[in-house]
Image 1 (cartoon, rainbow, N blue to C red):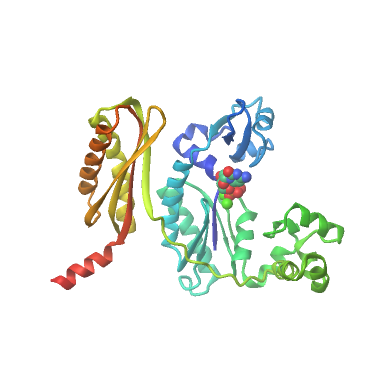
Image 2 (cartoon, rainbow, N blue to C red):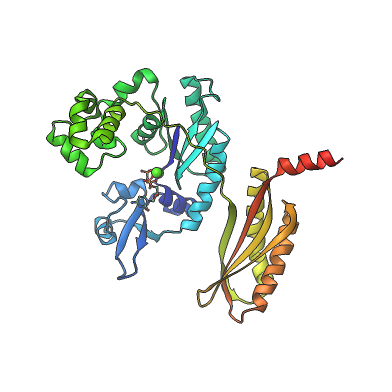
Length: 358
Ligand code: DCP
Ligand code: CA
Ligand code: CA
């Protein structure tokens, strides 16, 4: 099964500002040369109706959206990472094996969970989608298939908020009519080349003589195209580890050197981090604070605890200590504050040790 979050960066922006929902929303990477230089990172589906999509130069996006109430925003990777991490955490619970492949995409091995049944797989996927919607407020598209290749293409066919199940018997019927560029690794050049050879669809590629494909593209690629067109893929879901640190950062209302103001802000971050800790059932041994100063320089201080903890109070006192130190070592005011925990231990381990001890 593959899960891909819909118009992800733009949807994150809608999440923190629901008033954006009905307007075209464009998230861009501003290069800073001139006001409008840079490219579109992504756009919501309202903006896509105007032909605005990832990679488009921003000035062109502005032009295409000029008579609309379009909202242009700069990327905020930290925020998207946080949302992504929350969703990934939920998805993990639905999988036998889990492989995150990008900020908004993950493969889930679910064969054992659903005892090989594609009906159950569809139900599981729907439940998972509902769960993410309810807990985080984000919609995603899911593809279920007999392998990663089919699952990925299935997830791409209905967007947004899609759920597409392709059973083994349906592979051929599902893939055949699709244009060849829907296969991973078939870009513009290859598409053009295949076109020259009279191959436009995946079905045509599947029927094409594999030896001739090898002659044109080389052995490895030729065999890959042949197999991919038939929906053959033996790649397994490669377990990816969980994030090795959890961090949150926030901008202060006003620059300050007042410890109480800083701690008031970090209290909210602590609350958020602590929720994550509990949900993941981990404890941490290292705490760090980060401060972006008024001159935009970044300072950080960290502390290793004597033993792993998951206690919010431990976190709070460490952060207080670290910020006292940090403020004592600089005369500048602080503009943004961050908190990070790392050096995780699974809570079970600690509990087991305690039980053994008693
Ligand atoms: N992204 C980017 N530049 C690109 C492509 C993507 O910065 N050229 C970022 C922004 C996207 C995120 O990666 O939100 C995920 O990329 P996707 O290709 O999955 O696209 P979206 O999630 O935006 O849209 P879709 O609903 O089509 O999945
Ligand atoms: Ca996506
Ligand atoms: Ca994606």
